[in-house]
Length: 283
Image 1 (tube, helix red, strand yellow):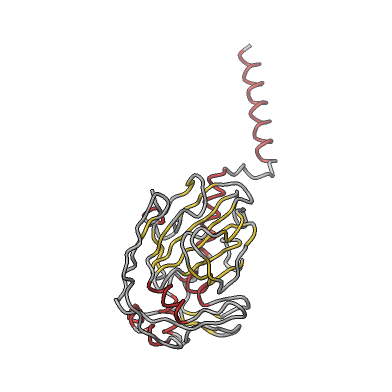
Image 2 (image 1 turned 30 degrees about the vertical axis):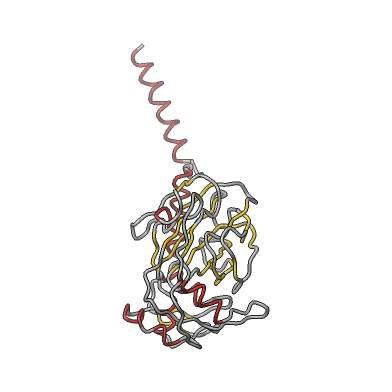
């Protein structure tokens, strides 16, 4: 009886070994692993080289965004004047000294001195006001493209205005900001495909496209000389580059381009560096 039991056990063990050796399909991947791989891929797309060759569709703002640099620093280091026109094949130096932060104001096409706003803008339940750290006197600029002409007056107002932040979409935060080098550089908000994505503050669209790997259909808005915001994974973009937008204006439709599910990846950049959006958005 005991001998028969041993024989049957050996046969079963042999069958299991054959089944394992003949398996060709990979082990199942969990949703968590998919999301982690997705973020790793996105971070691989960041620019960490000493220089970059401009491709068709690139903008200096998009290059600076990928490299985690202030566009003014990048422009000054490469002797590129405002409005930061670049060309395919042009080599952009990415090793930028922080000293360029104070010299970039000298490369604008036209300068004008403006007065500090006389009144403070009060926050409410849906708006959070954050005053950028900047010198009392700032410079404006002139930029034109088709029908979207940015006048010196409008630029001055943009550069000196207080940033009034509001939530770009309504939904649950499913991924928070990470201070780790390879972590999430913004927050991810769940939603439904087609939901409206709104500008978190007034400003000018400096990028609208899908050339940045890992971000899908992306919008980047400049709010003043210090702050940018980014809106990724959209299904459809409703704004164009150099277009002025107001806080709460719809700029895109929510989607899952370059993502595993429908979500908005939202970032705030201060002088090129990523900051935690939850510290700026109203509670």
